[in-house]
Length: 247
Length: 243
Image 1 (cartoon, rainbow over the protein chains, first blue to last red):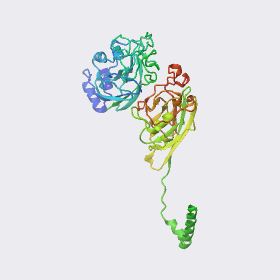
Image 2: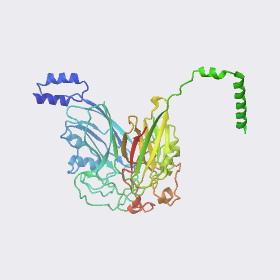
Image 3: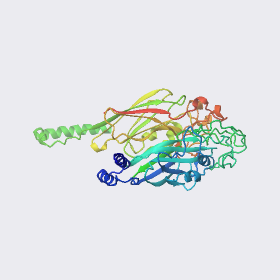
Image 4: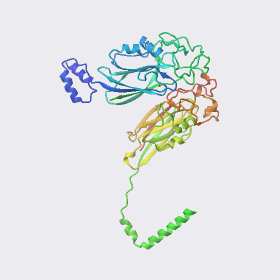
């Protein structure tokens, strides 16, 4: 009983009217309490890069046990589909009890642009994650992993980094290959890449999710090793800014 | 000549009036004297360290302001910022209309070196205390890279308190990152590289900088070498309120 009460008070901490809360908690403490007032969030994603597009973005508020990805562990097949081909459907399907905002930019998020989504979060969905593939890369993605959503109203802003899913060799060849296990980069949306590259590497030695080492590119748009332009398609971290407004 | 004549005339007039009024000196003491509003000064010490290996920073522009910002990701760079980012000239940034008080660093801030820039603002209305501080400088061995602090809130900084931060680098988006010798105003350009050019031949939006490529990493025509490469952060900054 005491534990239940404690839990109830803890869970409802985020609500401002503490007096009302406490009485509600007391009233309900004899039954299992799962319902907590929703949080209304506005989440803005800014592409900070100068030459990289983001494919459809998946924003999710979820519980403490759910992870879209974990550094140092192998990517799930769902993450791989997102990172190699920009397809967030499998990741989204995996998130059965999460609150989600899918594809707020209605397609690609161009370099140095922003998009926003509203999200109502319920229950135990106290953690925020954001992912989107980066183009042109083989399996690079922007990643926010389980950021604890503050209960206090306010605006919170921070930057995030680029990850490599570890599922595909970074050959930097634009082949249209976006399907699972198909080598190559699906596309360069900026239409500023080259062709005829022989491939930067054919192996992916680190199969765990890790910080992306960046594109290499070259200065030969008709050949060389890479189809990418080394003055356009590189980046330095951070690659995105997340601004969360808790209402 | 004219002004001297005027002064003489004025002195003569004053002498005449004084002698004419006789005992006016005692009556003037009775006149209500308006108390000037007390002057309030806020001063800050800004310590800047260049964290790069071989990117001298152009003279640092430090400014106090109450509104606006020096740049916004995704928006066009202002012409003063373009000038700073392409040539290292901070004069136009320091002359921006939002600036309450502006201060320039002494000169180039070389890699591995630190500099202290003192800046203060004096005002009378207690509500006019400076709200924000901004800072900008060019990485001179680049086409148009800059770094700095954008509208950092300092309104809650008490005397003796400090804020420390490390800065990332941005691309003004106004000049293609060709890295050609003729386009690098810093020493890597041989001293004759072009600075400001009003033409905007890049994405014309401020974004984060992707770093320089260099001749050693696959850009054959680059005037830059492996030594000019940089990563984030590029500056370490500490702002301390002194007064």
